[in-house]
Length: 179
Image: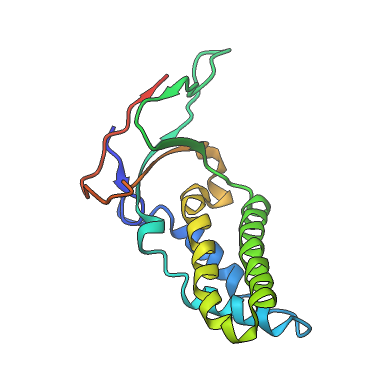
């Protein structure tokens, strides 16, 4: 089956829900007692979150489970034959989505704070960019899996084909999934 660029395919970007989820998370005002470095990290991460670039290059094929004969297991996957392809279930639970975003964000934020403590406040600008960029890198493929909880009945699976590390081809790949 043909895979599409996950930022633009199907008329509306399928990752739009996930992008909005992350932007909403980052846009929440921090408590007044928040460490100024944490507040700086949050504002810089939001300002630079734009989901473009190599962390977000990939293609997807969308599959839905369907009802079969009684006792049949819909979409039983035994192998994925395309290199650099992952077949993963969509995540519909908003609580689970936010927990993932929070965990990935917090690990990047904590790393930034520990790096500033280790190397000194005068290096904070040098440390800020790689740390918020690390969050962008970690959240990239998760965005494609986040789905609106109202669409849980779709029971979607996503075949994610990561872009070649050498950027050798911009042509959409075909995904082969053995079932």
